[in-house]
Image 1 (tube, helix red, strand yellow):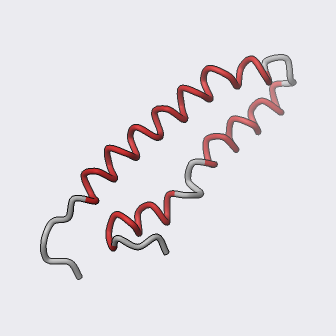
Image 2: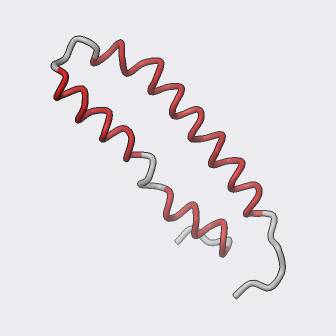
Length: 71
């Protein structure tokens, strides 16, 4: 258990906010052009998947913020 504050937490939070903002802007910019003509149900599935994809690296990132290790 850590007893002192670490720089990784504020830096990690700022990095997470920046990364999610960039990811969201890229998706909002390019996804409608690519899937705009698809049926609504397929578009919904794509947006759900894109909305969940960012969670994949999150566990390791949070572990790094707490421990300084990636695994």
